[in-house]
Amino acid sequence: MATYTRHSRAPRGRFSDHGRSGRSSFSRQKARSAGRGGHKGQFIHHSKFINKGVDEVVKPYEPTHSFADFAIDHRIKANIAKKGYVKPSAIQDQAIPVVLQGKDVVGIANTGTGKTGAFLIPLLDKVINARHERVLIMVPTRELAQQIEEEYKGFSHGSGFASVSLVGGANINPQIRALRHDPYFVIGTPGRIKDLIQQRALNLSKFHTVVLDEADRMLDMGFVQDMRSIISLMPKKRHTLFFSATLSPEVERLLKEFVADPVRISVKTGDTSKSVDQDIVRIEGREKFGLLQDLLSLPEFEKVLVFGRTKHGVERLAKELTRHGIPSASIHGNKSQKQRERALGEFKQHKVRVLIATDVAARGLDIPNVSHVINYDQPNTYEDYVHRIGRTGRAGKRGIALTFVE
Ligand code: AMP
Image (cartoon, rainbow, N blue to C red):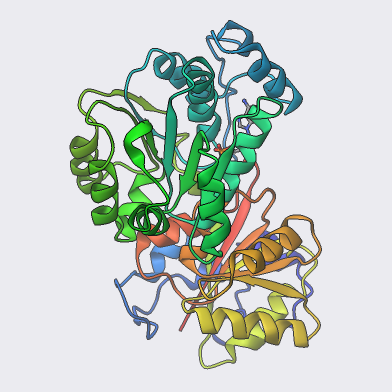
C-alpha cells in the first residue's frame, strides 16, 4: 500500500520492512510466512489480508419507481421526504411493491443498501391499514435493533404507531411496561424476545408479520433455536421477510424453513471489500501496542475502527490508548446498552476518532466515513474478516484495512 506509507510521517523501520529489504510498503511483505499468529479459530493465510482496492465505478441505480408511485399512506411519503430520501434505493425499489402485495420476500442485501426502509416503509403502511396487525422484527444485535428503531421513528413520525426495542443488556422492566401499551412494531434480539414471551409480557398471537434481519448473522451467533421457537408461537399464516447479506447453503436451509414461496431480491452491490486497500502489518517481535499508537498518530487515520478479539482486550486497549493521549471509545458485550450507545455516538460525532470493538458488537453497524479498519487481533474466520473490513470503503469511497500479523 505504497500510497499512504509513502506519505506517512511514521518513524522509519518501526512498522515497515526496511530491516530486510529496504522496501517501504506493507504490501510487498506478502505472506512469506504462514504462521498462525497464535489465535484461535480458522487458519487464514496472510495473503488473504492483502489486496489493492479499486475505485469502483458505481453506476447509480436507476429505480423504476419514485416514492410518489408507491401506494403508501401520504404521511409516510411526507416523512420519507423529511428524511431527505429522493429516490428509492435498489432494494427499496424492488421490495416495496412486493411487500405491499403481501408476498414473502428473501432479500439478499447488506447494511448500507437501504434494506431497513425496504421493509419498514411497506410494513408501516400495512399496519396503518390494518390496525390489529403487529410486526415482529428479529435482529442479531442491540445496535441493529436501535438503528432500525431510529429509522422507524423517522418513517412513522406523527402517526402515533408506537414501537419498542427489546434487547439484552438493557433493563427489562421498561420493556415490559412498553409492551403493555401494545406497540405495533416490536424490534428485538431473539434472546430477549424469548425472555419476554416466557415472562408473559409478549404474546405473539396478533403478530402475522415477521422480519428476520441479518438472518445469516443470527445463524452465526447461534440464535436458530430461539428463532424457531419464537416463530412457532406466531400464527401459522404469516407474512415473512427474510434478509441476509450472504446466501450460504446453511442460510438457504434456514430460509426454506421459514419462508415458503418467497420473491427473491438480490442487490449485492458486489464485493464491498473491492474498494478497500487491504494490507498486513508485521509485528515481528515488536510491541503491538506501540505499532498501533504509531499508526493512529498519522493524520490520515481520521476515523478508525480497531478490532480486538476479547471483551477485556478491547476494553483494555481503549483505556491504554486514551491514557497515551489517543482518546478512544469501545464497544463490546460487557457494556450496557447505554454505554455502547454513548461510545458509538462519540465515534459517529467525531468526539473520538478511534473506536475499538469486538466482532459481535460491531455487526451490522452503519458508521459513515470510517477511514481505516485495523485488525489488531486477527479475525477468527475469513467471513468475520470480510465483515470487519466492510465497515470502511463504503458509499463509493476508498477505505484501508490493516491486519496485524506475527
Ligand atoms: P440501511 O442499509 O437500511 O442500514 O441504510 C443505510 C443508510 O442509508 C441509512 O442511513 C439510511 O437512512 C440511508 N437510506 C436508506 N434509504 C435511502 C434512500 N432511498 N435515500 C437516501 N438514503 C437512504
